[in-house]
Length: 208
Image (cartoon, rainbow, N blue to C red; front, side, top):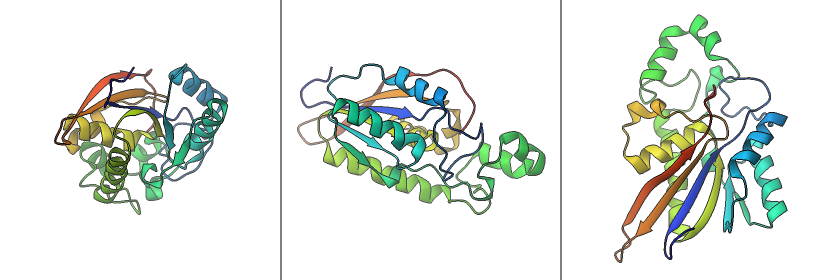
């Protein structure tokens, strides 16, 4: 339960998507049946949510819409929460890329800030987009409980911002399908924010 004046944000990664384990940024695959079950188990009986905010991607928005309608919770879609565009890597597996572009893939894993997937979204632009959305969310909501449904990349960026993790260490944050991370944010009298990671849950899985 949140304290007066405290904002609690539950970050939920989408479940397993159709098409298998691949780099899926703007590829708009829906959830599998297992993906739906993973997300249902992750959210459980969330109580007293003030709003649900979701990426427009089907693997996020389909579940968000269903969950919001069932519980009569306001729902908003935020395009800032879209996953990174992987360009020509879209739909390819890590195994494929190890065979076809091992050096480029290795540089991306080591530091995505300096290696952009061919034809993809530059990391600096991706980060700025996601953090713009995060800042707008914090400005709009000063207290209450929110459920944010997004992708591995955007959630990693938000967690890195909260925990002050260097961007070159971003991929050390494991986020399996339907991983749920809870952030608490308090404000002092001057409006200064004090965020903390309260909990993180999820089973290990592959995928971005």
